[in-house]
Image 1 (cartoon, one colour):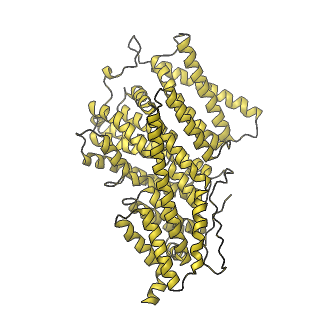
Image 2: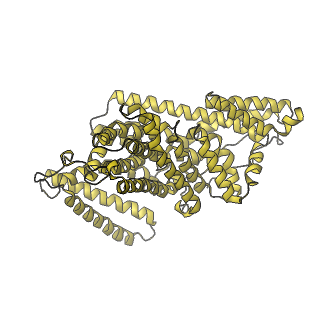
Image 3: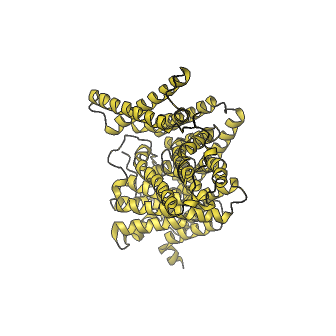
Length: 538
């Protein structure tokens, strides 16, 4: 029996962890207790030296000193403040009025606003709850199918998991030893594609079953001109002029700065165009020029603040002016200013946001501490080699590895949330992917899209729970579950597209962001087993 345990201690350790997790015991304590128990077992069996466990304090202090993880409370705090600043309500009302005349207009507005909230808040709960409270009653009132309305709100809220500044991508970058800035840059196109696929599904449904997605009736469109005109022509004219300003700035600034990268030039040009549109709207309102319609003015004043916040956070990260942690700090400050400008800032709001942020941050840190206890012992008993041999011996080479790993993540997402998947499984499969020659930035984005489904899986998806908590009584839980299934399938299709067309994830340019966690284990004995994978910090 003893020889059997010695020969198979790694799979036994992993299997015991699965049993702990399925029993409902808290994840952080399951990881730590499992690691310590098998650490003592390994010492008793002579597989490990007692000195190995002396590395735990260094690892824990390394986690506490990891600057990258500071971005998590910053972005969480930013999202919680924005949730209560009135931004979501204004966006949904205005964009709903803009798209209202077409079939599925409110659904398109929810998807668009979901993407915009994802790029500003990065918090799923904030997006789903806000849109569920505001848009779901409107969609039901005007005859939208209950399942579609529920599914589109839940799915649009989960865009916060893949569109930067996503907390998932911060965790993925940390666990894979890569730059958060690179992970953000690489995830941008897949996030936009997923948004477009959601809108494409609504468009398809509007053609096949138009009764499911009716247009808003005339009496519900309250941003019309006194003469009854919608004012959309004025908005299109402003957009055309704004685009011209952006192109002109791009040409002139690019000519005077020939060494500027194309993406950085695009960010500067977009910022110039946005500033022009905002100044034009202010001048039209204050000078009573009458050049812009009510619709055009409202769209500008509602869209500019979140776009400015996106530039403050993502723009500064992408052009190299700020690290993700610094960008998160500026975003949190910007969210406070936005709430102050909307007269929504109060001590009660700040206290609630700080309380929720502290709870989430403590949750993440405790899981990370538990996972580092588990991983230290697991690698000490050569568990990483067992996982590597198991995955590299799969038929199909790299493609076989990707298929098996993604199926495993997809199935486990029924029972575990993304934090647990990221802290338990990613450190095990990451080194294998690296050994197979897979770019870890690309791999991280792929797993991020996959883990996005953990919020949508019936019956345990958190986005479904968030929506259930604010949905009217006439919306049954079964309606929410059935409404989520098409969007889960769309997310699976997106995973397949990334595998089939790797260039969808941009990994060509790497930014110089050295915020990764670097663990140095000072142990007295040189023959103690060491982790076989070292993060390649570049």
